[in-house]
Length: 140
Image (cartoon, rainbow, N blue to C red; front, side, top):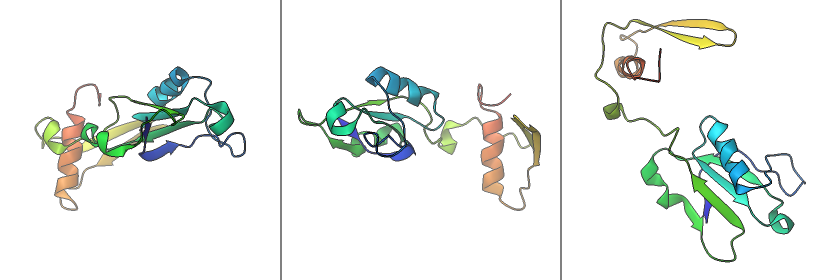
């Protein structure tokens, strides 16, 4: 089965162009697991036809998976998999809004960025950030 999706990391083109290659479907899957934004991996199982390319891709919602199935027959040299991670979040799936949150901090390798929320500029964006800030295991 070969899945389509937005490309997170392109596969190497049989050694002709740079990109990601993997020596097994498991290693391609593990690369997706470690890559931010990746929730679909596609690996070439036939080195002579496609050089063990490993493509890391993403779709927005789990329900989109069947819609991105490109090919699935015995002649397709691709093996694909889906990881249930990094999907777009619906605002309805987030905790209730906490309007007392006025500042959020982002920790980066270069330091902390403090962002003052400005509801007058975009109330819906501020509400989304406030809800994200209340999501367990997402923010601390």
